[in-house]
Length: 256
Image (tube, rainbow, N blue to C red):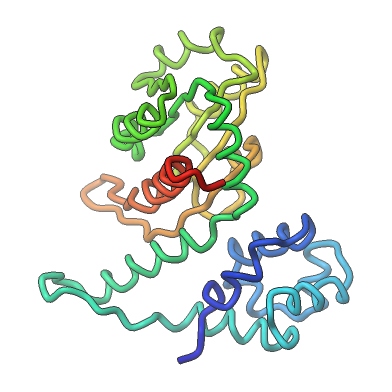
């Protein structure tokens, strides 16, 4: 069976230089656009030469640019067969759910994971920031980092966030969880905190350009289907939990 983009690049994407890492992140976030781009258009979009793009494709293990874009097409249009329990009522969605989970983990940058692990080893105060949809994750996220022996805060309301602003230091760590990356209250808190100190900001968002990502030192992106029902946002937060658990369990096992 032909391998998808994430499987083919799982090893080769681990040690990319800054330029290639930027190109790789762009491809992951804009796969549907890149798969239809000529090498000239991709180079123009990223303000690099066509030679850089060609070498980037080769660095990932592709024979050339056509092989690279063909793999993107396969990834976008074909889903892997899933071996699912018979109790799952909707095999199609379950298949997509598992695919999103796998792609979220595969897209985690090892250098960024190492950077976060190094910071956590310095024992910072950790602040878990959530929006309306990710708020239910706050308690479990707090538990994870307390489990590392870290002083961890998960403010539940805006006034609690405001009360913490003047207590933030450069040695602290923000962990911001937001699908859209555009939550006004969260961004306002971060920007006001930056007036007094510069804590490390790690965010987890969807793979698109958003305000939260632009403010972040490290951004992990998650893949999930948006689900709206009855006026409520029921989009899965499981990929976010997977990212957090990967980071925490890596620290517990001594991996950096």
